[in-house]
Amino acid sequence: MSITEIELSLPMNQQRRTLRIYRPPEVATDVALPVIYMHDGQNVFSGASASFGKGWDVHLALHEVGLQAMIVAIDSPDDPMDRYDEYAPWTDDALLMRTAYPSHRTTIGGNGKAYMEWIIYDLKPYIDSHYATIPTDTTMIGSSMGGVISLYGLFAYPEVITRAAALSTAGWANFSSLLEFIERSLPLSDAHRCYMDIGTKEVSGPMTEEDYLHTNDVISAAVRQKVEQMRYTVIADGIHHETAWAKRMPDVLRFLFS
Image 1 (cartoon, helix red, strand yellow):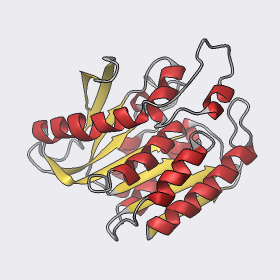
Image 2: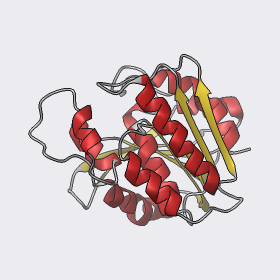
Image 3: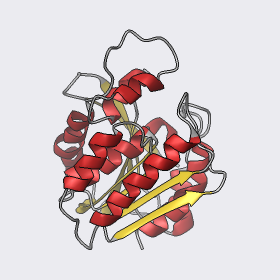
């Protein structure tokens, strides 16, 4: 596996962010490929860089389903509070409640819109100009808070993002704001696809299984009203962990690219 690592700065806070870029080695560098942008990039490939010692092995999932696509994995901030800021388009009291340890923060979230603008207007043009890509074939995938920002990206920039997957979405974060944003959005085209899932055993901090199940049920119903090609799966005994998401990735890719 050959991964190119580069660093770019986010304009809203000047933080440096590592990008992990993968193209299937059997594909010539001048062959244009669809691009999949993924959040929590340190977890996308091997466990060596993963936050909790286990990666998604997404390159193996590509190989398993026979999909030739380029991966652009964007590392999340080292500070989990900064991660909440970056993946939440709106500030949110639920995010403050979610923090399991004392924090000086009085607000959390709200940088997600600027983060997505950076992806759409800075990062994507950079990738399209430095690599052989299909600029009109763009997918976004994330889990947990990465699911929140992926759903936001699909509805904020449907002219750019044609596919999105939100695994184990932290639906309790930005719940009302995200739901209203989706409900107010125009229906997407037949070319758009959206995948969502949730496990029945997902917990994190004070957030319970019911918090995850209820919010995902409601959000997925709203998405289904806007995206004809939509799949929502409730996974018996599914947990909130990279091992679970790695296992599901082949089926996620099959749906998105079928």
